[in-house]
Amino acid sequence: MKKALLLVLVLAAALAITYLLLHKGSSAETVEKRDEPLAVSSSSTAFNRSFSVLMNDYYKLSDAFVDWDTAAIREKANKLANSADSLHLNQLKADTSIIQTAENLVQSIAGEVNGLNGETSMEGKKRELNMITDELYSLIRTVRYDGGVIYHMRCPIAFSDSSEGYWLSPNNQIVNPYLGKKHPVYKDKMLGSGEVSDSIHFAVTQ
Image 1 (cartoon, rainbow, N blue to C red):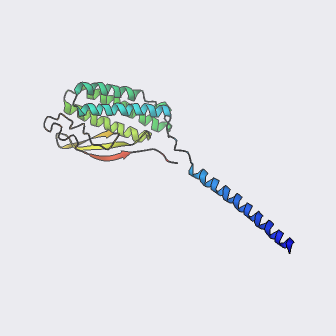
Image 2 (cartoon, rainbow, N blue to C red):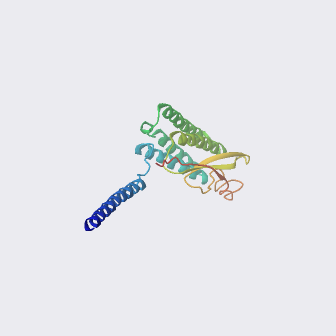
Image 3 (cartoon, helix red, strand yellow):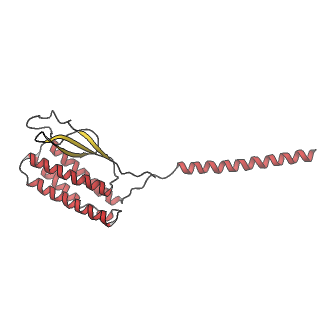
């Protein structure tokens, strides 16, 4: 009788130990799955830094248009051209066709900056801003820049109160560079006019 009772106790203890070991392994596996590393950028740090400089120079150019400051527009446009030329496309993790497309877009941006500086009227400069925006918008999507959310904004009356224009912004607040603070007709009353047409966010989650 005592031997049978002792055998039952030994078996129960063995089962308890086995259960605890299995449960501990399962918990460790669950914790390991929850603690997955953050997503790694699809591009190198050097490339993302150079692209961040490019975007910041674009935003400063847009701000100069908001102020209708032609001297600042020229200065910021030239800085934008320099940062586009300094973009580390050789650090871009992509195939050769994508890199070639990106190089063509960078050259187009530089060309539009030259066009902007050659324009004498604010209307002409705004049209060049729209072209630069289109090229940069395409470049962002081509290289899948993942440094943060970029908003694609639309102004329905950018040119002659009848045709649309676009600009890019790091946030969804409307500050319209086409109508600006010193519009000859509206002054600053239409500064908040426009809408978000798209948001670009290529950050990858794993």
